[in-house]
Length: 317
Image (cartoon, rainbow, N blue to C red; front, side, top):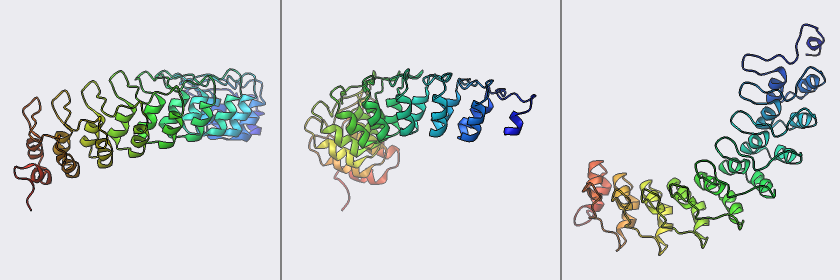
């Protein structure tokens, strides 16, 4: 490498068709020795972006190459907060992949905005919460500029991200904050509990249900409640947990007139069907807007075990 750089005809900052320079490639792959050699050349621009707007610093941060990141941020020409074309900064990239050492390093630099969002409105905290990076979440929550309730363009918050992927420890950290609202919905009415129930994340659901502000029967714009979502997907543990709450209506219909029992029956979740049938406040003959009962839904989809539970006279003995 050193011999090549000494040749007059070699341009150490020449880009490929995708805009990547030798420094971009070396930084992306964590080759510290090559990075140092290239940075010693006056012609090399340490802040040069490729066609996607990615700088060498951004590539190194994404891949967790702390030594390369350190070398680059020590250069006055390198902008530590320069975003890619998609709006993602080096800090965002490090947070997404859980590189806590690099996150700390970048936050020590002037000019780095810890709350800067990408083109989709997703902040570094949002990305760390989505991927369950507990230590990065802790570091970011200690920054005064970070707003843990900041929404992405879709209306999702960091807490919703943690609920969606079942990251209990991240959810607990966020819920310790006074400025985090555990029952705040998206524009379509989806709450963190809705996410946890839909995906069957019992641990997160339990943590959310411990919050006084959480209404376990909040419906989205389609009229679907957390219980309905849990029953729809056969998440027995979450169903049981929700049915323990007095506020939850186990026979609540959505905009199509379907109940939790209707969805559980239609999808063949016999255990959930049996639990719901054990409730006095569940009507197994309730019709949806198309005139279908839970039994008809089970027959239609060929769920024999559910049909046996729902048929008149109950299951065979």
